[in-house]
Image (cartoon, rainbow, N blue to C red; front, side):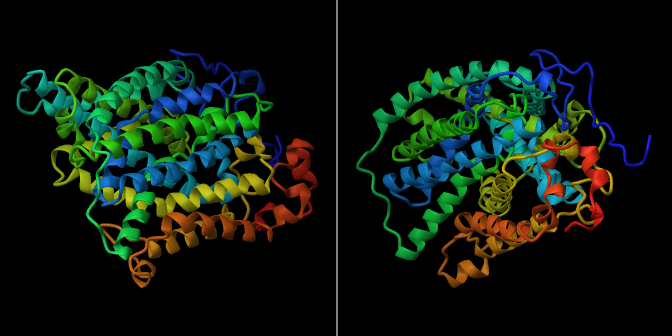
Length: 502
């Protein structure tokens, strides 16, 4: 075999995508013969992950920031419009037959993607896994206490362990099992939240008026609230992971809207419920104060909502984090990466729950700063789909050798790297958080524009730089050209060394 022959990606002849079986595919290409399903199935996947207590807490945080009910409701809607971007990213899955972390090699290069795709993806995934485990553990301990179950000293750690296993087991089984169970998780959680809504609306203070803040501080709190709400959808730059098993002929509009609505509808409804609840109870710790507005019999149900919602959200997070870990370059099975990253998240969650001085404060700090990274990352991905016309060759994306189409210059695609760095640095300088205030935010009197402008800056810089590259100017070398010609033929006839592409 010649040195220019294309190495086979990590394929598995016996790969199956059936519920109850461990999925054998990871970041490799899903062949056309294994593509199935309809875009509408994506709604239940995203709904099951987002009928979630975290959005209820977000709504309460907006009231705690000193915003009025109508302001908080408006921010809940506007911040969650980012779900449309998540739907847009999802169309790249059927186009390439690969997950998001593989597709991001097109925008960062093979080596660059190990940092800005796989690396950032693992960190973001671990962060949300830790939050979900911690929240579900707190709720489980509260439920056991409510039921009169006295735990021997030290067995609280076992409760966390059970929560962690429940969080990651479905991620190990993979795509088909998640798709199969998603409607059941969604339905159970939706019914419970509908009942909760009845009690919240009955107790709500619709005449609620917050303490008036100075104009500058008021706008700073509104922008901070927007950043926190936006961090929800912006953390899901993984739409392709769940759409990649669809046929490449699947409706793009269907993929976009079923994905977006699956996240947007529950996030807005539950977030709004949290806003309204904030007019009646102290939302600093709703798990403790919810008993003030619901009957005694419903408090265990509410805690069950928290537990099941956190676990169902972690199912998708764990699955994508496992794929991101494969994107770091380790040749290990996807199920193994889910277990390893899950173990790391469990250990960190144990520290956060039992040893950390302040869980809620730590979570809020991280959420406030996360958009400085996530905003540019999602925008770069979205722009790449536009400039490449959603043409991604999954086989070429899986070729990690020097000289391959996505090796670019030394393994880095500098337009993506520069855009991500510039977008993040400027966003950090604009940030005004509880933990840190950037110099631009200080100059603007505390106004935090990071969540608004970081995506614009990151995406704009990428679009500008991308048009100067050889892949744009030379059609034969443009990633996606292999749709019209054989990949091997394209490489053989290429007049420019791929190593020199920048």
